[in-house]
Image 1 (tube, rainbow, N blue to C red):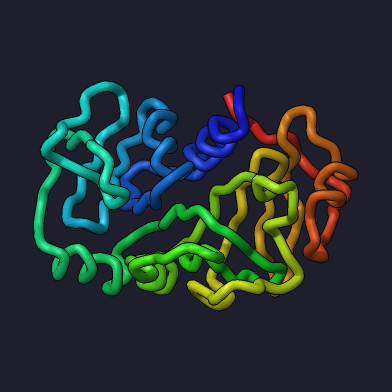
Image 2 (image 1 turned 90 degrees about the horizontal axis):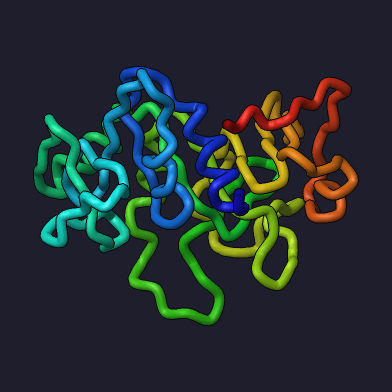
Length: 216
């Protein structure tokens, strides 16, 4: 099981029956393939529809997700304009949003829109999503491609949102925020606390009862 699959499978376990969820581009879109059986979740795509379907070969080339990739629409899905799409987001109707990140820090700050050295069209809907969703989960690989830490003492890039992150899921561990502190709550199968410490710049609490990620 590769790093991205580990992350997507673990995030999928956070979904509950009846949830309305927005999945960001990248790793979060993989979550659709691992939604637990018996769970009905409605997926919101910020470019104008609810009922985003799984990436299982049924993608319609005339329908794209927020990342511009062909997508499928589940039975009962509905399409609408951007005004309605962001009314759903800003109105607080999303149960959660799952986003990738360039940096997250020990205060729950998130930076995920400004890529150093690259021209970007803007922050997209990320700022609205982290402000409007009831819960914000960051799904990302634990370190950058150059091996540098992505979970920092303090973000260095322009922020998407301040103190907005509730949970971080990486290929090494799961963290959550409680009482203003970053807490290590789970380790990926085969990962060690020492490995997480060496790949994390942020200060975090290490409880005595760390669990192993229950991914299947």
